[in-house]
Amino acid sequence: MWPSPLTEGATLAVWAPSSPAPVAFPKRFARGVQALQDDGFAVTPLSSCAASRGPSTLEPAALAAELHQALLDPECDGVVAAVGGWTLINVLPHIDWQLIGDAAKPLIGYSDITPLLNAAAQRSDLVSFHGPMVISEWGESSGPWEYTRDEFRAVTGAAGPWAERRITAPDTWSDELLWWDKEDDRPRAPRPGGERIRAVRGGPAEVEGTLWGGSLSVLSLVLGTPYADRPDDALVFIETEAVAPDEFAARLGQLRLAGVFDRAAGVIVGRIGRPGTCLSGYTDFDAVLRDIVPGRLPIAAGYDFGHSTPMLTVPVGGRARLLCTEDAQPRLTLLGPAA
Image (cartoon, rainbow, N blue to C red; front, side, top):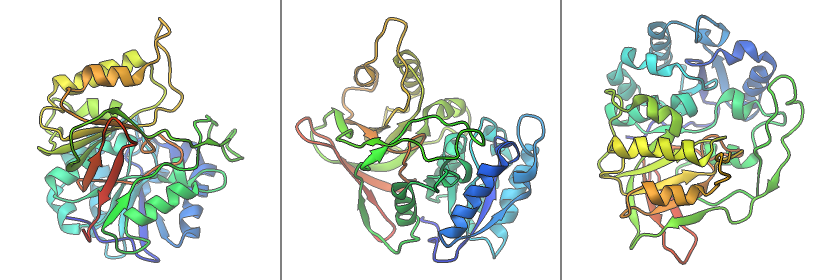
């Protein structure tokens, strides 16, 4: 089930279930809120955005209650995360999944928000959005990158109904690191886009599946817990940044040993910003993918989702088609609510 589209003037509640970054970086947070307002949304920061307690913002039960209250509010049309972090996993046992499904409102975020998005798709039968957050994307010096904004508006329905959306690479991108509220008073330096989307391993035919995945490091947190549910025909999408091939191999190996790829239809990998090297100097991430992901699965890589600038919005729990052959650039098509 798709959530209600974000129509013109929709009200977004801003929820901070992870890092207390809105308190630590007030200038960037305010800039992100303003950018959302400038784009035609009404914005309501929740009380967690003004809190900083212990390792997070509020207690896990209080954070869940705050989310529930926002979703029940008739004035609220959707919930967007302020930023990521490490502590959302402790909120999951307090979530009312029936309430999330009944509310049928968009949930938006990535990074630490990854397990909430996947669980909502599996437990609430509700498509959620692996997409831009207030501080990290909307809070950029000159606002969100045009590609980020356009993809967000298209996939969430803010730009109107849609049935299919072919994913293409942006013209420019950046992985420049600017410290928030210290160095981020200018846009990040862009790099040419180029043909980064590539087939790491081709498959015999076009495959279709349900999108499941997100941050590679956060996915690891839920394996072995009740919140690792995944569809039988998953198109597994994974993203990460600032890792070397040895850590990448370890995290992929954990997914394989946990059975993530056993019934999957294919694997889609995000562009790895600021990649590291192994102590030996080894840098071949594609070879790691071919070694660890089972040989029957097509692998396409170089997509701009997750920790990527600019970034796609991915409908978690939605359907997509992937055509990935050895002799052509992969073709990934999202299937929307009007499909």
